[in-house]
Length: 180
Image (tube, rainbow, N blue to C red; front, side, top):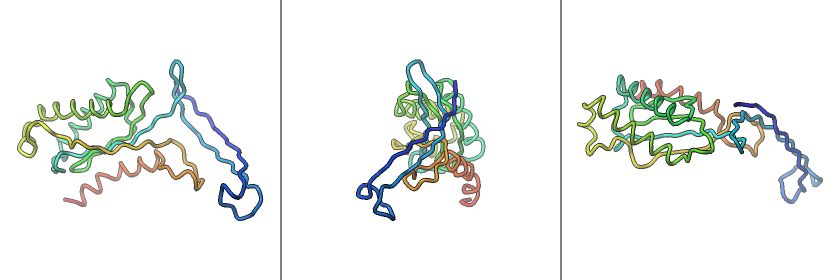
């Protein structure tokens, strides 16, 4: 079940604890909109930006291989109960914006995505084995950041929004074309 709430926080801070133009008390109003999910005992909003790189940064994610990877990851995420908001491949990496719940540990989700997608991709596209050996498709490392779904213009809220990340992930095909 999704709900959208608006959370308004009003605080008063003294000039010593927050940079102000005046020496008097500063008033800050921060309004954040969250799209919330509900569990049995929790309310949450968990959005992640994940980047996984191909082992040795081999340039194998193009054409049918990239399409197969996207389909495999989409199928896996549906089975795991996570929602992929946006996904796009570069020639040697993949960006995934996804929404999760509190029962999923991010490291276990990523481990499952990497291991199962590698096995299925090698089975579907055996030609990539000439670039990657020992059945290792993904690099051991990955990038994961939490993000949010609203757009707050307050200087203290410098976290990247989902809309910004969506535009970035969607721009990956143009970047891929520029590298060819």
